[in-house]
Length: 373
Ligand SMILES: C[S@@+](CC[C@H](N)C(=O)[O-])C[C@H]1O[C@@H](n2cnc3c(N)ncnc32)[C@H](O)[C@@H]1O
Image (tube, rainbow, N blue to C red; front, side, top):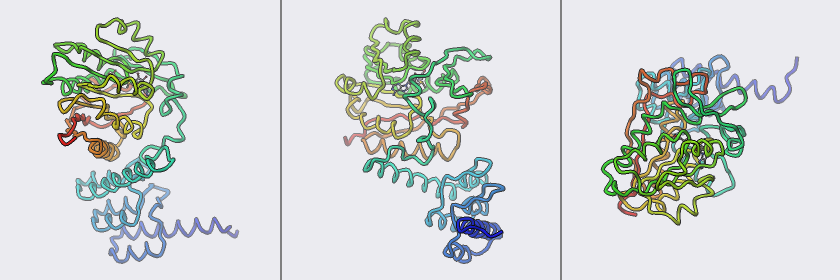
């Protein structure tokens, strides 16, 4: 049977793509590979059986020069094979830091460029890391999330969780296993703070109230403690727990985007933390821009829940670097502390909920205004 024109094009690309990958795996010379690419072999092509791209193959062969060449020619840094591994994961499996770093840096450059383009145009969802523009569920749309019912329950291990149902799946909005991360965050935000007897604290997103409870449990409780929380079920939960009557606590019952003018008027915060839900990196970056006007001065500290991309080591690394670069843009220097996430107590922390943090280490950011601002 004759092929249509488009079928013929697909056939040619498939053959060229397969030929390129086979040649890389056979260890052909870099000149031979360059020739195949110049003949039009598609770098985006992935084999049907394994989902392997030319970049995966080059990483597998640990050919640094070839990896660099393919990246320079526009190979897709974040394509995943059928086992959900990127070419950088392949490099990591060989402990090949050089190749891992080439691919990671390509990711950072691509994301920086997309963010820059989006700030100059109407593109709203620039990140290529997580495709969110098509996800209108409570997992990725604030509007849908704020209309969804939340459940505050204890799971079978006695872990407190706040969950939202998305289709047939349950997703943890906040889960008790994050207690250790929140503890380290409060310690690094508040311990040794020159104003520790007189702290003015801002927290965005109440969730289970873990971090707010820790702020309140400081040796001297904050003199002023703002909490921004828009979800009606969370606000109900806060009322039940008596948060509306705690001395110094002020609750803004709306999204941070709708509270920011009020918060900027208050200003002068010693510690600022943000941990929302269903918001993407670009939104977090939007919050970064307000920090110089929210923080009291060089001694003030900022942190955020660094959980984006945390199902894959490469994506997490790219987001972490991206955040550091964007915070530097607004005059905040970040230092990172590693917090061990998985210990014997929380090995079975997901139950039937979606697994959103799969890495053994949490990279805790602590930002301060650089002296030059
Ligand atoms: C992950 S939880 C916060 C957990 C909290 N750090 C703790 O220690 O329990 C996220 C919270 O952010 C709230 N939230 C979502 N979008 C928000 C927004 N745009 N502004 C403020 N809060 C938001 C959610 O309703 C939810 O209560």
